[in-house]
Image (cartoon, rainbow, N blue to C red):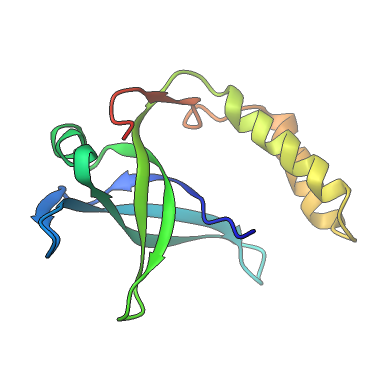
Length: 153
């Protein structure tokens, strides 16, 4: 059995645009910027920004048009779809606006990552880096992300 399921979190970088498919099905799309943070070969922190096209069809179109706004952060649940031109887009099951509360999730994510790395092959430098981040505690800018209901499709 194959599984095609995607979860993304990022910033909306374009207003949703409504069109329709040749079949007449309503269709809306917007772009989500998803940043991946990593350490380069030199050991320095780096960020790569990916712009991903998000698409919603049918009954969810009006909710997305009303509630998705440029520059706001969203959590998207959906599946990948590859088209004849080679492009890959995400078709949505749900879109949630992210809000912030506190920095608890940051440490929990690091603890889970540390656990995975400890069970991995020889990664002592990565383990030390994550342990150091945990010892420092949550950063003020890393606040807990929650999801506002209302755009579930």
